Amino acid sequence: MMGIVELRAFGKTDLRVSPFGLGCARIGGIFQSDTKGFLNLLSTARDFGINFFDTADMYSQGESEVLVGKAFRRVRQRVIITSKAGFCLPGRRRFAARLKPILRPLIRAFKLRRSQMSSGARGVLSQNFEPAYLEKAVEGSLRRLRTDYLDLFQLHSPPAEVIARGEWQPALERLKQAGKIRYYGISCDTIEAGHAALKFPEVASLQFLFNLLERTAEDSLLPTARAQGVGVIARECLANGLLVKDASEIDLGNYVRSDEERKLREEQLATIRRQAQEEGRSLMSKALRYAADTDGVSVALVGARNVDQLRGLLRAL
View 1: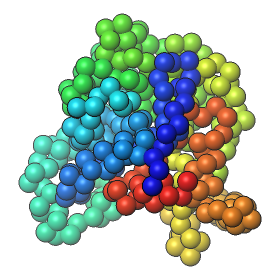
View 2 (view 1 turned 30 degrees about the vertical axis):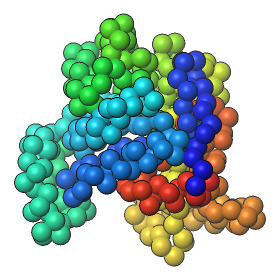
View 3 (view 1 turned 90 degrees about the vertical axis):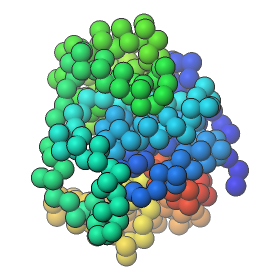
């Protein structure tokens, strides 16, 4: 299989990125028994030409960063590593992270799954975007990633009002001046948060939900980001599997919150499947190309838990 050889500009920065990046939210974790598989996945992604790896300090209680750092410690300058901070892990998750070597064999023995854990057992996430917290978070990420710098550091899903106050910016400027981050951006959960972020000229990137089912940003946010030279990271390009699975495999009740939303999704999916068939390509291919080829998108994130899944995604292209 041919690798991804095209590299793109990332906004006004000097970063050159592959059109697809690997989202590392599922790299590691207490329910995974073999970290070697993740290291193989990361190195295989780079071999295929993916050079953009998106992680966060909270992913797998920091283990995602550890594995990304281990996979690329000898080729650090050949990859672009971005991490995020702003969520605070509850004490029970931090405790579980320290006990992973003990808990993993037990989970395997009793065949437990993530879905069997109650939300109470996982604890409640809080957020902190105070300058001192962000500086400490970056230091922690650098340590876990075994690197001296982050190519890109992002605030992790801050509310629009937090962005607008701008109290976070001096800390990120200090980190940039110290060489610990090259650029900084914001991972947004709402269109309003994205527009708030674009009022800060120093913000180099935005990350937001963007797929064939969620196209609001195409007209409302993407043109402004493109005009300002802001790098755009598209996430959830396959809509958590809705744009991959056959209709018979999907229980829309797990994806919607109302009957109206269910009806909308059914109509959208029927239309998109028909279009893909008329174009002579798979639904997955159509979804991936839309995310990556829309004008203004710098890099589209894909997720994979193993090499076979990654090969399937690349084959669809």
